[in-house]
Length: 110
Length: 122
Image (cartoon, rainbow over all chains, first blue to last red; front, top):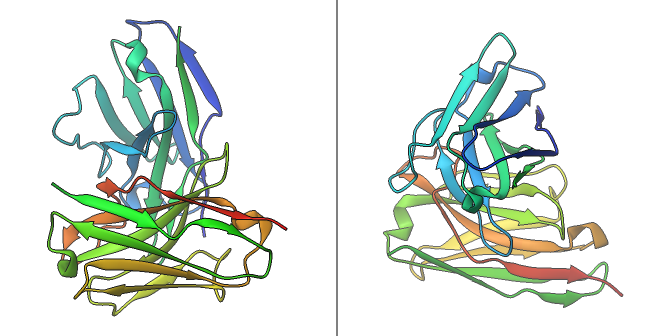
């Protein structure tokens, strides 16, 4: 099984842009889609990006996803930060018989 | 609208058993694969188990393999997780989660339940 490594926390000011990374330990990041979930305190997770770079309906276009094969990582970028974006963010991918979540990144908007 | 409602959580002693249920509505349950995902207090998300829409495949995290069993009753629109030989490290909120692809699986989640808390303690 592989692991997905995320920074424990990031912080940025309202209106700025932040990028959260997710690095795959083995196997190619491009071999299986990456999803990103947002979880606010006390709530269930919701999807903000699926299949590397797709946004579900209702998710603002301030959220974008990408993958970089050279660093074997995926990234979630949030532009025009709002205080409501403050949450935990988890990347997730899979192989033939397992789903794997990253450890999560706590985003603080201050 | 899609609804997933978990039940069956509670306090259980180490070595004990518990069965979680997830009542699904708002979609054709029998055509969608399902997952259980858990979250220990103050910790991150951990995938636990997967069951294909037709029960033809079931997969488990190494941490629960041999102790947990995922199943479903498509006639009752219900997903289950039988948990045996429970340990303190199984203490978590357990989420029922729906895969978005019908008659297949995409290994991702589009809908989550509200979760049910399982506490393993003497």
